[in-house]
Image 1 (tube, one colour):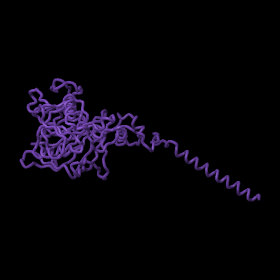
Image 2: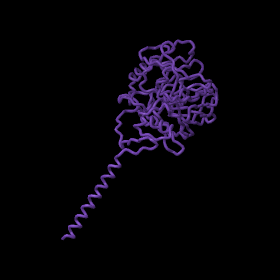
Image 3: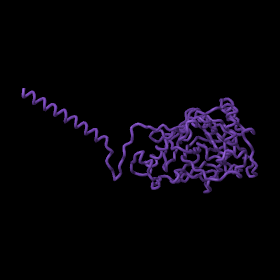
Image 4: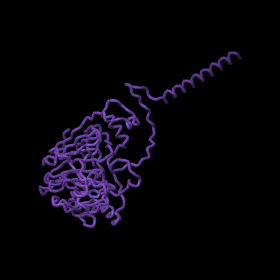
Length: 386
């Protein structure tokens, strides 16, 4: 009897000790991680409670009703024959730049719920711009275009707005020459209502959230690892960017080559031409100015996108030896510049309806930082230097 009682007591003591050890282990696991190199790493919650709405075009936080707001893909010239400075280009969430003809570049600028009083100038469409525009479910805004592009718009079920003086107007500034066709955010909204186009289902680039991008900026530019919470509140002014200067050469006319200078203060890339002149545009925030010349009603600012993507494309002269023939489907080399660093990889687009995906050299898809993104379509005979 005494022996049985002794074994019972020992068993109870053992069970209590075991339970105590388990409790201690759980408490230890719940404690903040120890300091490393003098830095304390707070724990990151395992589940996200972020219920914010983010734009499929820019990745920025927006209101819920803006998620499906109409998008507009506007053909914008960049020639030296009166196209510069453009108006409203700072409000485009994504801008594609490629050679349109004779070495002269042109933009396909994608806007969602713009508020700019003046947007333009507006010029003609090319097929490759249309194929880049397609995933954004936008109204194609242009002034005529190449025959193959116009046929694709007519037969492809696109929402279309070509040169139209109900929803566009001609500016009167003499130095614009034929680059004087403009629209406004109000006119675009009216057109969308009049034609019953409704909202847009945007299939944009893969994006980081603003908080993830801030974490990425810190991780890529300093050697220490901070938590997302700590990075979001940290002072980034002391960071050292890895890549500060980018040059894109289109392999044709030098005046259309561009440089980007990274600005840590704004975490953006100041855009200039090869000669060092800043690429200035008219910013026109007041949407109630009416049909005006941007020169008389808007102010100048330097373009500074948050992300620059340079993708190498297969390009050659078209049948007329004047326009361009650019391959938009398939894959090619690409460089993503964001948060002060560069990623070498490749781009991939399988069908016209598919959005372009970007992958690093390990095959991992690259999520772009939120904000305005410039996509440079660099010919296989051009160059990208940084």
